[in-house]
Image (cartoon, rainbow, N blue to C red; front, side):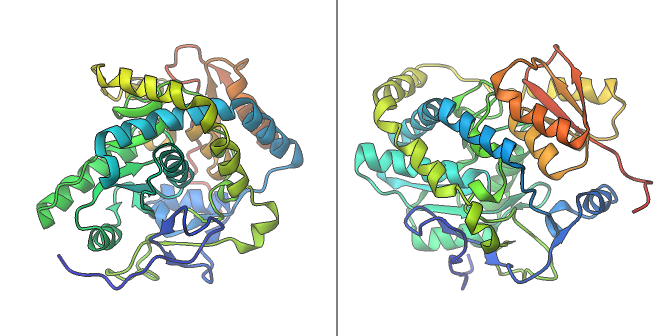
Length: 373
């Protein structure tokens, strides 16, 4: 296995003790395009990882809703974090290396690290790396981690599951890595919520609102989505990302982490009990959410399942950075979809009642091919 000269990037607003970003800093390069232009490029075959959406900055009412939601559900999020952290520590102990998938996985990885430190007095290493649908995981980043921790028992971490595309991408990446280098990596993905039944390591399978899904970089350390563009990334370099320093005045990343962490003392015993109970359960995956997705694809005559994004987190992403067509809603009265209804109204997107759904909601992306810029 070749060695890499890459080093962790000093980007983002998190403390270095919380996370090391294994990303190339592309902050000085203009990679953003309008949502409409970018959607047209992506649907015309340009890979989504080659550019970035413009970071949506929400109105005050939406930010207020974020804080209201955070206060209401901080203990629920903390419990889910605790359940996952307990399972990781009970399974891997001090050997565990947390590797979050940038960027939604980063705050989750930090919270898991904080929980284990608070309750087991162990400081696990935590890195954030890039994984990209259809292009795999950043192997240079994995090589860096294994060079620093030869006996590493890597635990991959993300925020939530939708259809399971990243879970499948991770499994494929781990298989490819084993074929190339003879190193077995655990492809189990740890998430807060697994409404798609895509993993066996989760805090809940309820499709609920994880507050960090409401915002973009301002709750993820001011780091952009990851970029893999041959113009800027050499074959031996880490995948890239930008640091949005201009958003420091509205950054809530560390405040979010602290608010959830402060709840750990209240949920620790329940989390440990729930994690122990899970040891004796037979947990299936089955990617059950894909049944919904395929039915929706047929019913709404959609060209690709890539345009169908199920679950609260993924629907939020559609509204924040894609060109939405419709939002399907199982229960508009759920407290977990208030922000979605607010965004849909702001952007003039139709909300369709759709009771026959495993998820709370589903975002449909508009087909823009054939529409002139």
